[in-house]
Amino acid sequence: MNLTEELLASALPLSVHHLLHYREVTAAEAFDLTGHKHAGWVVPMNGPDGKPYQWEEGKTFCRLKPTVPVLGKDGKVAKYLTPRGAGCRPYLSPLLPKKALEPGRDKDYTEGEKKSDSANHHGFPTIGLSGVDAFATTAVDKASHCRSSKT
Image (cartoon, rainbow, N blue to C red; front, side, top):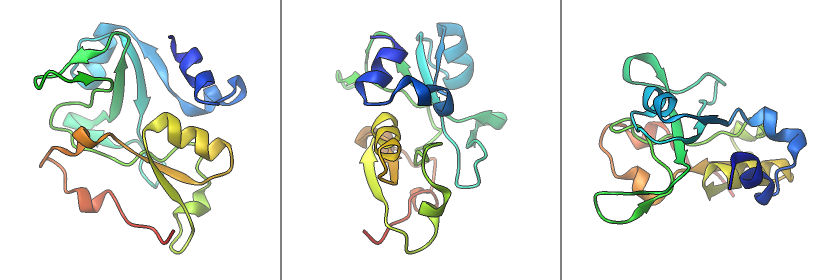
């Protein structure tokens, strides 16, 4: 399934695809962005200030979905890949209303960027979290990136 088909299958109409900034990449482009040599598509991640999260040497933090799933060292299929040692970041969808980040505002959390984008598009302010395995790192102080909400 290509990127457009995946976004449509996630209840994201063509009219919002350009707002998401996902893009298809070659294996060489993926390697430059994430350190993984797999063609697929990337999701850029931005902080609450709207600026891209950074990792190694000022590179923009992206997650990669390889066209062909990759087996991890544990033998499990890794559907998404994060730059090694870059930690985990919350996904703040470009569709998330800015007011949703204000203290006391109701918001939801879900696993994954596409689910977050879809929920936001359909009127449910939602922050996306990477899969459970993405939190297996000590490179980033998770408390500085993930905050609780009154929901």
